[in-house]
Image (cartoon, rainbow, N blue to C red):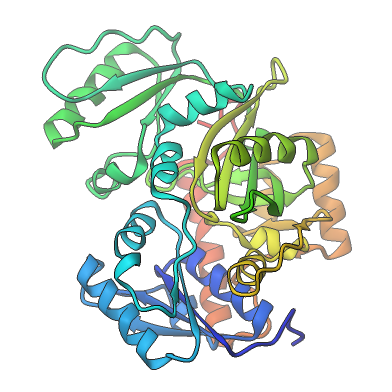
Length: 410
């Protein structure tokens, strides 16, 4: 295949083992023709059977094991720049904690610690949005620390409840708690507070107004800022469908890439204003009643679906390497509509109810502008077949968790 820039002076290292990990490895491969090393305890079959991934198995995902693995890779590839990428909150935090102790040929492209902590906290992110004139949902901040009674929500039901900081909550998702809650009445909210306290959670939760609209009212932006405050990657997509499994709720599984210059301008103003460096992934919801565009989250990483940007003309890993290794400040923007999907196309289409969006969906299919990160012609048959099985498995998941679209996405 034709690579964007064939090179052998870099060694990508990705922490993880899920589909987003594979997507990043594919981006590195299509950009530079290089295989990535994936560090983890295990990985999905799409990764283990891939021709452009080498697994580095560790006994656990703790600091010592990850640091030792990176050191071993850096020593083996001493003549190369080892670029370490993490794409979940906990792994980003881990890399941040060990980066100063790593060998000199290791590059960890992370935002400054204080900024990363600031924007990862949804409370502080809302305050930042207010400072830059960006609209946010009505929100109550609830502290679960201590044993004091928690006041009733001042926001009308139904409403949304979610953790203020994902990194301190991930452990509780593993215990069966959800990423986000849809609450009909105060009694449900009180039960959640009691359950969280009993489980030992003492952080903050956000209680937010429910912004109606199905999944197609969500937008996703991905931006990369260099150290000079210049936006080198500008991409975006209208979400068509999100995962509705309780532990993965809100992760897009079907999108149409769409240039969004007005939103890009607003986000870049905020990121430049706070001195941001690196990737940022922003979630926005359009209110069908008022037309408001509400900023929900900013994730200090490239995001689980970064491959949508690559298929629309702006490969995030190409932009990253050209900046941190070559010092190139060329700006890359997506420039076309592509249907990005992880679920079967026929399944995604069932959830699109807006006529204009459906017409664009069908046009993308007609043109052949359709892309799934696990369908890589350059990869092995075994990897592609494993990806097909993952894609088909979504049929069962949606039948169980979200069989029909709703006006609220819940």
